[in-house]
Image (cartoon, rainbow, N blue to C red; front, side):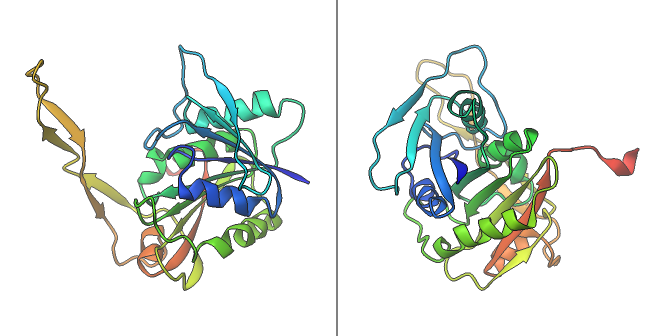
Length: 247
C-alpha cells in the first residue's frame, strides 16, 4: 500500500485539505502534516533558528488518515514527514492542497502549496499540487472531488521524471475537460498599498494587494486560459531553474 503525505499552506482544518485527505485514502495510507495556521505565499521557505513541533491530533472523519500539525511551513511539513515520521520507510506520493486560490503563472513560485511539491521533488518523491480558482473557504468542491483520485492515479501510472512535480488548477463549478498546459506569462502591478499607520508608530505601512495581469491573454495553451474556460489545468513543473537558452 502506498504511503501518501497530504500537506497544504492554508493550515489544517480547511475544506480543501480535508477533502484531499479523504480522497487520497482511496489510493493508499494517508498521513497529513499541515501548518497550524495559514502559510500562503511562503513558497519553499524553510524555518531556521527555532524548533518545530510535530503534534498528532485526533480526527475521526478522514477514513483513517493520521493528522499532525506543526508550526512550520509547507516545505517544513515535507521534511518533517520524511525525516521523522517516515525515516524508516518511503513516502510514495505528496499531495498538496487543495489550495483556496489558484497557483497559475507567476504565482507558482510564491505558492506554499507548490513549495511543498518542490521540496518533495528535491528527493524524487512524486508530488502533485491542487488549487481551485476561489479564495472562499466554503467554495463548492464537489465538481473537483471525483477527479482527485482519478487524475492522481493517472499521473502515477504515467510516471514522474526526476525532480519534477505537477501543478493542477481547477475552475469553480462544472469542469468541462482536462488540459495539459504550460505556465502562463503574467505579472503583478500596484502590489503594495498604504494602510493606516499604528498610533504608536507614525512610520508608513503597506500591505500586499495588487492587480494580476495576463501578458498573453490570447494564448490557448496556458494554465490561465484553461481555468478561464472551465478546464482542469495540469502543468508539469521542474525544480531545475536553469535557463538553457542562455548557456
